[in-house]
Image (cartoon, rainbow, N blue to C red; front, top):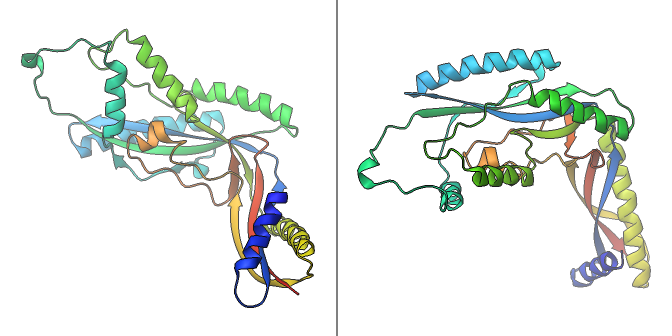
Length: 288
């Protein structure tokens, strides 16, 4: 808190014209999760784009049926626009380093160039309802749902290339990398709650109250009194809803697949504690 006051006073000191103080503050309205949201990738190969797309559509139909059996509502399932797989040179270099000591070098005469198949991909985001009201019950219910989702044959495991059999060390490293990026067996899980304009209004009101309290402390420290706000900037942060490129690294960045946009009708968070409608305000007050 002391550092925030000092920062506010420094801003006030350097501004030209009438004396002002600018502070930043947040307001939150906690939400209770009503669904478990999960995102995963589907891909299919073919000799050309048309054949790969045909295979992907068949795979997608099968997956949609499995999602409905789990309890997902088809109209709420978000499917991204298909894209072609792109090789990430950084990821390829990382994989080569992982395999370095484990893969036998092939003779040059054995390295015959082969036409690589076309790979088409989409990502799907679906939600399954949660019935619990308390965090402990929601935690147990969500973990049970995760097991059902993982067992529903939604994600196909990547087939190993020739020469990769028995490379347990590489497999372990790849699994660890997924876990570090928030992935669980190819799925990215988040808690979801519906958003409401009233939540934004309440969060904004709390943010303004916090901003005023902070500005008043700065004004008193400078021997002045606070007047009304002269400028306000608002950023609706949602509830940890931004699905960062780093978190999606394993399946999204390494394949250059566009990440799905967070739902505009809900708030999402990786943890039950982080599920909240959040508003950030930057407010400038006058001093006299």
